[in-house]
Image (cartoon, rainbow, N blue to C red):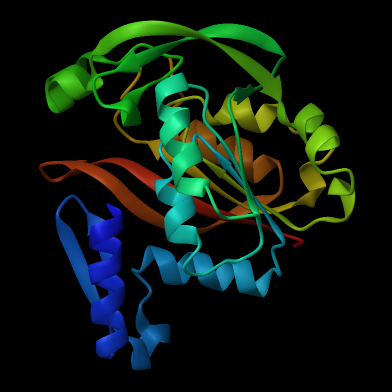
Length: 257
């Protein structure tokens, strides 16, 4: 959402008793702020409930793109935020979005299960840029937006190693891990083992219809997260194809959190 749209949105919300929330594409929901607890379908309210209930004090935004998640998060969370985006041009826009926010730090590298260098496929729409090739379904459904324009080498690091450098007291923190890495989320998750107990909740994009070749099916993703001690708190559609859901943003909470 552009800054102008954000200002208009906040102006309407301030002047009325309604909250405005995008729920997909060009669709928006008007939520009566006096009946907030009934807004079970609201992504923002679900996330805020988790952040507040678990007393989250560190958010890791992996696959930040141009800062959409970070900007939205700032409406409900004022604590420490680290965003990761490896594509050079996209990272520049992310840095601009975080400028002036002393508690929002951005990093230009990817996260994965091993410290290495990989080529990322930069697509027409940067929201589809991925380490994996787009599937035939994706190029048919999303057209030029999902078509690779070029490859760019990027550094990939394990989250355990990154936390040791960036957050010296990570073992005492209450972490929310958001992942939106276009088919690479499980690789990111496998890169945090030593500090995994500090992750009290996470958000992962899970796919019912593969958007990338070689990405895990959503049942595989959920199996890995559940075996690691997380359970599903909410699932919000990201994209649809007619009557079918393509992807969900899945919110999960540690069972013993």
